[in-house]
Image: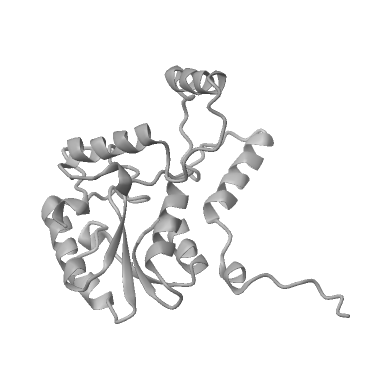
Length: 227
């Protein structure tokens, strides 16, 4: 009988450690050693959770809301999210089309799993949030990185997207406003990207977690408004 340790899966062996967590751990170690550190790694707010959120959580616990919830989320929350997309973007989203997940990263991973099969390609404009390629690899797909540098305002152009598409391309990950550059696609730019995606029958995973963090007159545009 072999005494060698069991090997991890191919998916697990292909995943790289998070550079964000590595830098964050280093910053915390320096701070613990007495250094004055200003950390720019993890996106951790410098303010506490607002009191009304704390009180709502406490009230929910006291009301016995501690059991299994419906898998896609409770109906009032799904309705509220559907209403948000109607009010903010004029999109007719039914609550049945809304799925609530444990967080943004898990939502992205579920979307990749739902749209991509092993060997499919996912286009990721760079600079990008470090988790995108690893989620793609964990799903068995292949990340295709396209550099969107300062010459394009850190925004992917339709020509760049067209050039990166192959018969295996299934998904484009788009993050506007962008982490880490802060770039925001204009309405015309977003429409042009969506038109390319529609022409090639591609899905767009639109990560809109920073939709309200816009400045200098920039306005977030959801790609779904053009579908």
